Length: 636
Image (cartoon, rainbow, N blue to C red; front, side, top):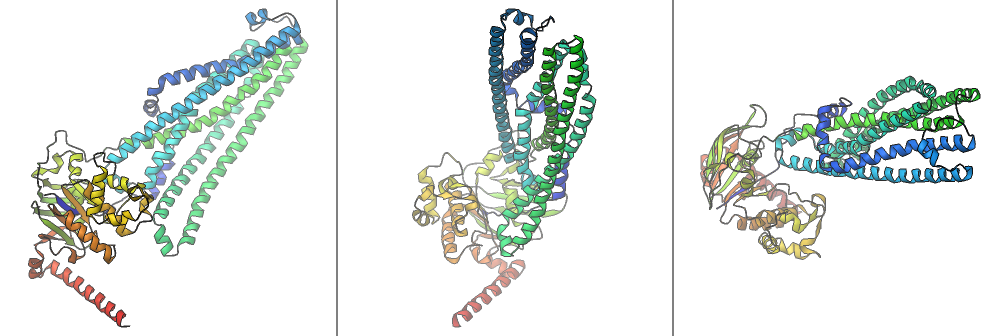
């Protein structure tokens, strides 16, 4: 007979604060880390053939970008202002017609073809890299989600939800920028600069040197921009982290905010956080605002120097007009990649920091794992044994101290005690959300640490004190993705927990949509859905915690009737504060300050006049006062 256990949310044992999260977001790290880059490139490896095609397209596009000014030079020097200079493309020059109109028409057609094919290659390269980046990030997000589901609850105790969400969303988006428009684009910019420099040096080494004369100033400006942009990027990262954390906390606690009329105070606090984000972006806007005009100004200054120097050389007959015009066109192409490289540096630096944080998460290994060689739990009814169990969430701050008891198959066992006595910890250990510090827990005589995790947790059906529903339908919330469950299984489970009357009133019955956290359903309805979910999976052990603590009297009667069916032929361990709900238990365990202080039936414990008797007296007095108040209100 399976065991019934009543389970509630685990205690929060977080020992890190939001300031530590902010510090983690501030770290940008190196602009390039070979170790991280090699690991990042593994996500691109499945798409290496597509990347190779993209790089080939980029190479051809860069050649087309360089070809345009050369065609302009040929048109001027061969037809518009004929000169005797050695042609830069002799094969093409000799092929062209000697007639000016025919030759210019041929050049115009070639130029048009270069522009069209350049557009097609640029589009193809961009499309392939964007698509590859999305595929790689899809794989990374999938890996992150799978890894998060395997981590221990201890990890979630230490790390706020906002930080984890930032890893899977914002940090992955930063890496997407690197893959789709960062690495390959950097290669393209370097190719463009190399081809432009080669073409300019081929035509005029002197004018090329003049063009490069402004480069030291450009480098200084770029370095200053990089420092400013990096500081701004760090501030933006911190601001985004604060916004995520603030929104997550205050949206989750919206009921408390409204209850205590704290909306205006919360808006004021968020305004400050939001303002920090805006100011961080203002710094970034200023940095980009002055950088591009300065580089543009330096580019125009270089072109002005070229005009003066080139004009002087043309008057001397040492330079052709076509070369000067081609240099003007190359000058416009020369500074654009420099601007792009400066921005890509920030993308690269941000990606290194994001990858550091992502890989830190992926490298976090769960402490609770299935054994290499597992044992199977025997068939039939199961007994549960706690053998001198000690447990602490942190160091040696013991929550349970030397706890020993046995639950026989078929028994209904209740656990009571003051808040913090360790009741919920018993179920956390039983489900192996945490491992015992000392001692052992056995199910069917097998140590749960020797049982494969999936097999172990499949034994249990869990109903939380605060029932949790997922977005979807009633049917999907009962099934929870279990393919073996049929529609009849779902319907039978709903009928056994007295949920079918409520479902029959819904227009779509089991296909009724469920909003986030079950919004729109009462607490009692969500509780009954949780019961149906547990029962539909036919668990051998059922875990419940305070199932009737937050429902009305009518729903409580339905829940109790459902419980009697669910506990039939199942061993039951009920954790409860209302002692009236567990008086018929075969055995009651009384926990006090982490120790098992008393054990026996309801009548035996009352006879001992110990902790249980005191708890019972306190609740009895409270019930008497409630009855008197109710009678007084009726008389009035």
